[in-house]
Length: 235
Length: 235
DNA sequence: ACCACAAATGTGGTCTTACCATAGCCGTTA
DNA sequence: TAACGGCTATGGTAAGACCACATTTGTGGT
Image 1 (cartoon, rainbow over the protein chains, first blue to last red):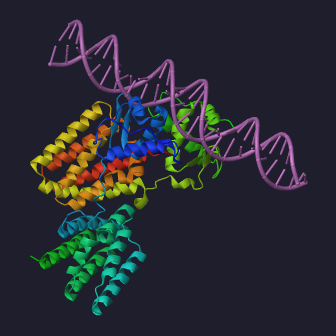
Image 2 (cartoon, rainbow over the protein chains, first blue to last red; image 1 turned 135 degrees about the vertical axis):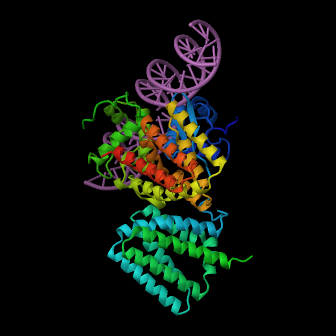
Image 3 (cartoon, rainbow over the protein chains, first blue to last red; image 1 turned 180 degrees about the vertical axis):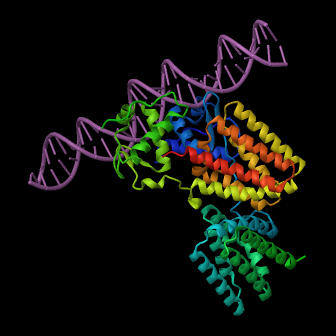
């Protein structure tokens, strides 16, 4: 295995950072697969043309970020798989059906948690979102923002910001190609009126602070959304 | 300025981690105020009773987490915002407790779905992950990859790739500072053995194709993980 | 007295060398 | 075949040296 030459000392970056960058590039370039063992420190330092303490400093950084695991007496092992960002690329290749089923699962849990702890302000905000949604429908417009606000408000009331972020991610522009398709399917005033009714049912369950009912209503709403989408899906 | 005595070498943690912990404690204890300059490396190493290279490794860690800024020829300075280093995770800068509660909610749903449709190959893969995890524990190693494989295999069996991606994201390196901290807490063989037992219970429920039991077991596992983490959290 | 420049000193950065602790491999023996 | 022990390889830590950069101090000129 032939390594690149010595690291240039003329660059302003700390040497350990440069070494870590180089090792990262080797990992991501497929030079080491997950679970593989790197050469011994002495060998790797020589191959990279640096001293062993400098290499060790770089390995500290890589260990902290989780790319490698260092085992005394054994060696340095690659722990990370490079590609975990497919989530963001919209290249999930999944169908809207899967997205909506995922939303049903996640937002069901969110509604359950929210019903147990929703504040008066939360209920007020939901009420307002519902009223605004009704106005938009009556005016012949698509209440996209109000729909979003309704769902994200519930997520915000779950008491778990990780879940709230997930709901937001599932809903928002990051999945634009997919969510755009979904939104296109809700073109008729009737489907929007149905969705509004389902929102009302969710609101009532939250108002009643009934977690299981809220979960069921949210789940039903998203399952209905899925069904509406499938009925409108072209062949 | 009188420092504590030498770092005990008998503890299993890496020396750099111990030194970093000690310096962190000094910072958090108000020994150094924001913007203050630490003693020179040579002096600080002597005061802490360690070698300078070991101290430098610790300073790398502290620099990466943002606690200190190292200026060549000048010194090491406490950064202006001490509380940046707590649980900064970028888009999900929430506490580990929230992350684990979110995982309980999501992975509970995932286990429920997986139990209804898991294939023979899926069960075989889970069996293998469990066996590999047991081997790692018996060998005194941290079965990080096997733990991950177990969870992601279940997610893959849910029949919903959106959910699978969510689980992967919640687990993986994108949340590296957070998940690295969480992983650090699972250092003892006993906690790993407990986790393995909980995995077995999940596997049994999946094998029995009992969705509600699988959900409950997964939920319990992640709640236990949370509890273990909270018990290990430093004060 | 003030300013500019040079020298001295202090600091972190990197390297070399040495020794210690742990892990793994291989050969031998029961 | 399995267990044990010895040897080798590996990472962990330390000491010392030298280099590059930054800061402080001293000196000379105006």
